[in-house]
Length: 174
Image 1: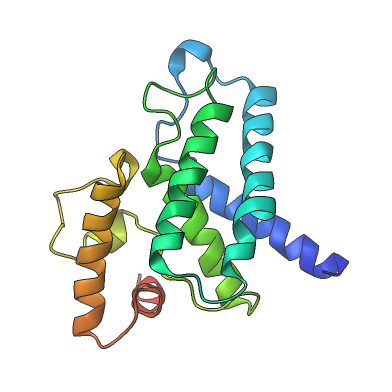
Image 2 (image 1 turned 90 degrees about the horizontal axis):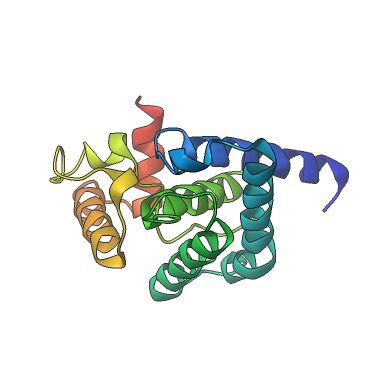
C-alpha cells in the first residue's frame, strides 16, 4: 500500500471509530475518559482488525466466518478494555458497527470484494420490521445481531439487492 492509500485508510478508520462509539455509551463513567487509555484501546482494536481480521475479506468472506470474526473482535475488545469499558464490555453492536463500516469503506474504494453484511444502525434498523424494537448499541449477542441481519436481508431481498448493496443505496437517500 502506498502512502496515499495508507492515508485514506487511516482517515476511514477515524470515521468508522467515531461512528461506532458516538452514541454507544461504551466507556464506564467510573473510570472517567482517560485519553491515553482510550487511544491505546482504539489502537489495539485497529491493530487487531488490520492484522487478524482483514485477511478474511480479501476474497469473498462467508457469512459464518464474518459472524465468527465479529465475535472474536468483540471478545478481543472486551479483554483489551477491561479497565475502561462498562459491564457489557465491547458490545457486539458497537463492534459490528466499526467492523462493518470499515468493510463498507474498503469495498467502496475497491480494496475488498463486497462484504457479507452492512453496518447496522438506527437508520438501517428503522427501514426494517424491527423499527422501534431494537437499538444497535444494545446488541450484545450473535442471536440479536442475526435477528437484525435477518430483518435487513428480508428488506434487501424485496428490493432485489444484497444486504451491502441495499444499505449503500439507502444510505444515499438520507
